[in-house]
Length: 111
Length: 111
DNA sequence: CAAGCATGCATTGTCAGGCGAGGTATATCT
DNA sequence: AGATATACCTCGCCTGACAATGCATGCTTG
Image (tube, rainbow over all chains, first blue to last red; front, top):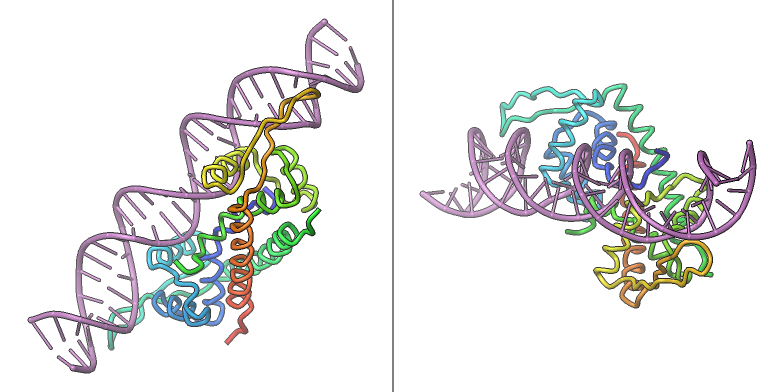
């Protein structure tokens, strides 16, 4: 397939993995954290987020456990796995290549 | 919507517009040109390409005309419009922001 | 001359991911 | 009591990438 353009679409997973590489976290927090980091530019929609969690757990990139909900609503925490770390690294490499490729194509001098 | 992650997916259109900003061209040529520029990393599939042409023409970003096929198969040439140029510029700006955003999220220091 | 390959365009149907809309539950503040 | 923040989840739609398929021309090579 060789760096298909379609790959550009799946970066939700990568962002989640990146967030989890800093330590266990949960949906709501990741969502808020990403929003804050990007100055509100990127809002991960809940539907997007939770489907991504299912997908990532399915493929063995993350594991989950329920936190005890003494205070407030219950939370499902996620942990990144070894597989997930490898996936993250691979995704980042692809992202680098993708950036270079698109930059090349879009910044190509006229004529 | 504010720079949705989904926007990352639609860069086929942008690449085509960029190619056409250098002068009129046609499907096969754009496809070969992109493949060559990226060292074969990016192969625009025909189905993708021609669907994109329809989409872009529909939205007024490009216009098309048949070249005379004296030699070889007939070709449909495409011209970028004013609207298309504006679209290209806007897309490039979005691309810049997107890059910065993802870089920020993926290169964020651990801890 | 037939077969194969490069050139060239086009459509149909499938699939995956983003996300709008809806639902549930708890705790706090007014 | 109602609003708001925290927190999770799912269904169904839409869009874009692309495999598969089909068509036509012209050149080359066995």
